[in-house]
Amino acid sequence: MSRLDSVIRRLEAQRKCLGAAAGEIANTDGVVFELGLGNGRTFDHLRELLPDREIFVFDRNVAAHPSCIPDDNHLFLGEFQQTLVDVSERFAGQCALVHADVGTGVEGSSRSMARFLSEILEPFLKNGAIVASDQMFNIAGCEALPLPAGVAPNRYFLLKKIR
Amino acid sequence: MSRLDSVIRRLEAQRKCLGAAAGEIANTDGVVFELGLGNGRTFDHLRELLPDREIFVFDRNVAAHPSCIPDDNHLFLGEFQQTLVDVSERFAGQCALVHADVGTGVEGSSRSMARFLSEILEPFLKNGAIVASDQMFNIAGCEALPLPAGVAPNRYFLLKKIR
Image (cartoon, rainbow over the protein chains, first blue to last red):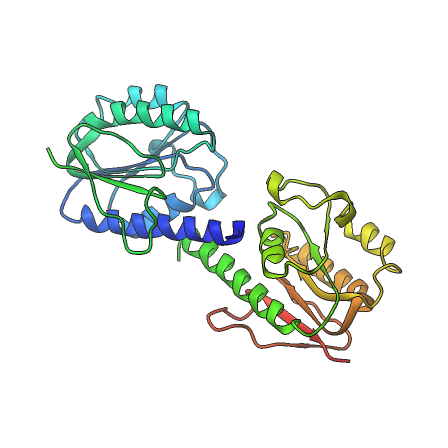
């Protein structure tokens, strides 16, 4: 499989998982967290999928297409270790969806980021909330959902808060 | 359509057009020119599609994944205006396929690059050669081929040298 094949498969898996996540939270009120703005593609996709939700974006810095940058009230710039702690009271129990595209490409650092996020994200999640991510998270009270058809195991991950 | 939808559509169009181009040149000997290495994805795809062809890559500089960088004998670094002129004798009439992913995102400069390449590429092309590109080229002796199913008009372009 070429790298062209591979990127198409990765982006399609991402789109399918975001679609599935949006369906799962249809009856769960709450805000959306986008961890990692990157070029802004998935933020753009999420605001199309979920036009009535507030989406809050967290990233170290802004490198997105100008049309895909949230306004200042929905953007938290800095390390997740800082920004997520800063908003922990404000958004406690308020999240219906967290999308985390945070793989660094370096296995050890991706794993340690996943461990950190697994801990810090838990108190934000409403019952019924979905966490969609490119890394495996292990969050208390969450169970793994089956992936949409055509998404290879371990390419993307869907968790649902069930208690 | 979100930017995620849009990039998936663009990459799929690219893959379909490269597949169609590879089929078209099945009975035409000759080398392949890849204009614009970028991240190396289409170079990687071309070498999978055409394992028995020599592929020569032209770009201003190398920003590709390490596994997708051609060896020094197949890489011409510099402005196309220089490198393509440098190889004009060596490869005259030798190309079976040119893939040019050269849009700059700035309309005027993409058009002027397309005009320049339309002129300079013509003498490289064998009869039966294919030019696949993200910009419309106007090359003497070439006719436009229909695009593969599902590729929107003007998203990609296929030309065939017929005389």
